[in-house]
Amino acid sequence: MRRESNLLFFIVVFVFWTTSVSASAVIPVKMPHESNPSYHIELAGWASLVKPQITTEHYEHATYTHYYYRSSGREFRLTTAAIDNGDVLYFARNFDRAPINQVLLKITAADPAVVRVALPIAGKIGSWKTAPSLPTTIHTPLYVDGRRLYYRIGNASVFHPLGYTVLQEKKQAEKPASIIRNNAGVTYSIPLPSSQTTLAETWGILSAKPLVKWDQDEAASQAMNIGFDNGKMLSLDGAYSPDETTYTPYQPGSFYRNPANGEGLHSLPYLNASDYGTIFNDVATHLGYCAVKTQNTEGCWPTYPRSNWLYSEYKTSYTYIDNRRNADNATFLLRLLKNRSDDAIAHALTKWDAYQKSYILKTGLKIGSGLLIPDYVGGVNASISHTALNHQAANMNYLYERYLQTNDPDKKVLADLLLKGIENTAPRWVKSDHDLYYALRRNLSPHPNPDYYELTRDDLDYSQSLLLLINGVPSEKIQYLIDEKNTWIAAHPVH
Image 1 (cartoon, rainbow, N blue to C red):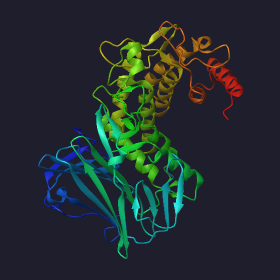
Image 2 (cartoon, one colour):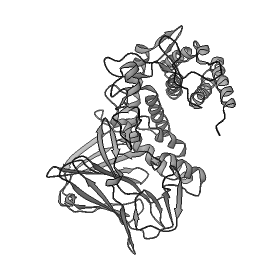
Image 3 (spheres, rainbow, N blue to C red):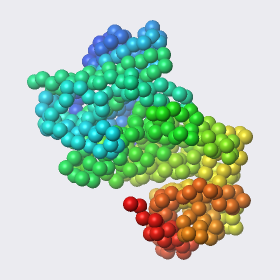
Image 4 (spheres, rainbow, N blue to C red):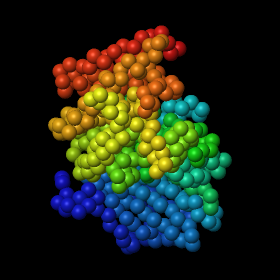
């Protein structure tokens, strides 16, 4: 249902000092069609003695309620995100403040039955094992299937903030969560210790429906890709990827907020909860609204840490724009919008469209009747970067896909400029061994970085499918590049 107000039509924020949630109160979480609360969230420690300030954000498919606890320089935040499918995500953070302190987050599931437990296998990213019963303590996340309730829960991670969205995990400071099971249910007690230099954070999902259909092989394998139990992390403000050694700041075990939202994009084919589970919708919904809230005033999504090699080559500084990550994120939002109406997502895409058009027309290198656009923008002293073929194709594909959604001829005109940019330089992308060059510099000389094994080819394959839909015929030049890359791949199989 569309909101009537034109002012802040997609988000309404309420701020108040609560009288309904008092100090040490239990927050009940009621599932659809349940007469009594299915879960309870409770705090122990200093925060339990503080009356929280509450802010609420309303979107079309989720409502975020933030509980802020502050006392004697300490700060704790608990957020519940009620998704319109009935699931509730929670995010808890004990901030890096002095003095050293600890808050205990207690989650009680009012369902003592445990049918199946899924846990990640230590040292094997993306690998899971199932168990018939609960352990007494956990150092890693787990998924629990009960008779009535299904949830994802885990211990808290401890991080040292390095700036520019980079968080360095401090595993030695992390504490296990304890589990007590009785006839009334299961209680998870999660310690969140913090200090002046470290914060603690945990998140989970509470549901009355299966989060993952573990017996369905594709559901189980895809849940590993998007469930953030595969070496990545999820936070209230978005998805975090392992930090690059070529980034500043960087420390071993650090993560940065990645604006690409690949996990959201990968979740979209699996939104049918009856076939795959509800986690895919939950992750897509949350990351969609994270993109809305982290979009800057220009309409794009920066990468905050500095890339050392980009700085060395182009003086590209902190908070730069990576047009591939932005195109991936915009494609995620576009497909999410195809799945359901959403004013906030639509508004974010309109802002992105205006930025992308200006970016293409201002920075594009004219190649006959086409343009090659630079991959990166960042810093007043930065020079214009190279054009990677996968970046060019991803932006072109977004524009064609957006054209198919909106029938806006402006999108096709821009996409055609990028297509002609590729076609008019097609021979320059091919190496003597049939591999493709990763990128061309502004003087059209090849960049020495190696091309991806399949990514660029896959991008071009998708371009062909879009061109077939729009023009009735694919591009001969694009097919030439695909065929050359396939020849190289055939000669270099992955073992």
